[in-house]
Amino acid sequence: MVNPMSIKKLMDARNVFSANHPRFSAFFTNVFGSGVPEGTVLEITVTKPGQEPVTTNMKVTQSDLELFQGLQDLAK
Image 1 (cartoon, rainbow, N blue to C red):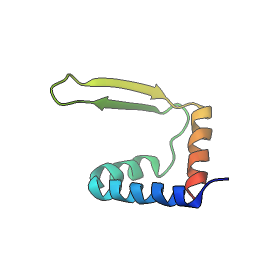
Image 2: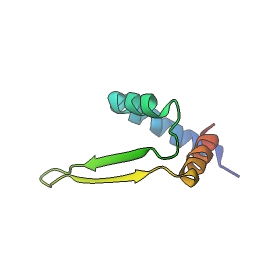
Image 3: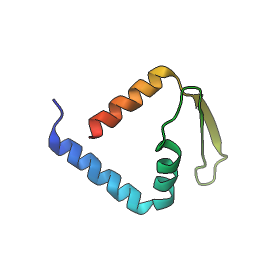
Image 4: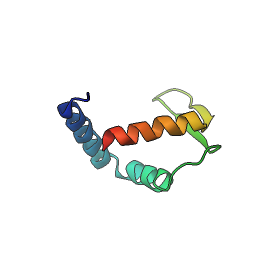
C-alpha cells in the first residue's frame, strides 16, 4: 500500500519544480500530454558547468509505455 503522505510530498515537490521551471514543465506537458507512441525517440543532453555536453537517447518500447502508465496511475 502506498503511503498517502509520501504521495503528497511527491506532488508538493512536483509543484515546486513546475514553479521553478515553468518552461520545462510546459514542454513536458506539450510533448507528453497527448501520449508518446512506441517507437518515439527521446534524447537528452546534460551540460554540467565547465564540462562538455553528454547526450543519450532511447527508443520507447511497449514495456516503457507500461511503466509510464503505472507511474501515472500511481500519481492519481
